[in-house]
Image 1 (cartoon, rainbow, N blue to C red):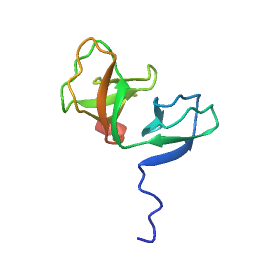
Image 2: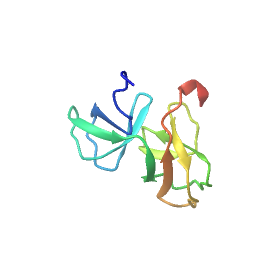
Image 3: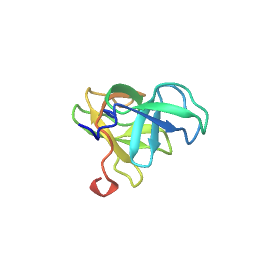
Image 4: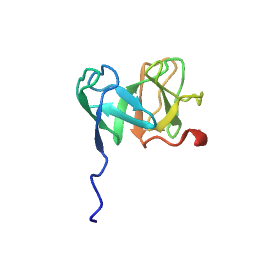
Length: 115
């Protein structure tokens, strides 16, 4: 292919705010996990595919296969389809209520209208 730029597994962007390595980062409908710390305005690489142990809303129980969303205000993963949350992937393991994190396979974000 002459027009392919990259696989898209890792996307390099400018950080809109300070981020720490391993944190979820949402930019519009793009979501990824930061590979390193970055200050606002610095370049940061976001991993957009794979399975990650991410912070979640503690008071939720997740089942394998549940759709998982990201709440950019709380910086937590959730099963809630509240306006503003974007779909980022699927739970790949049970996560109890309460628990602070869950395993998410990143699928990329879907358009807001599909939530």
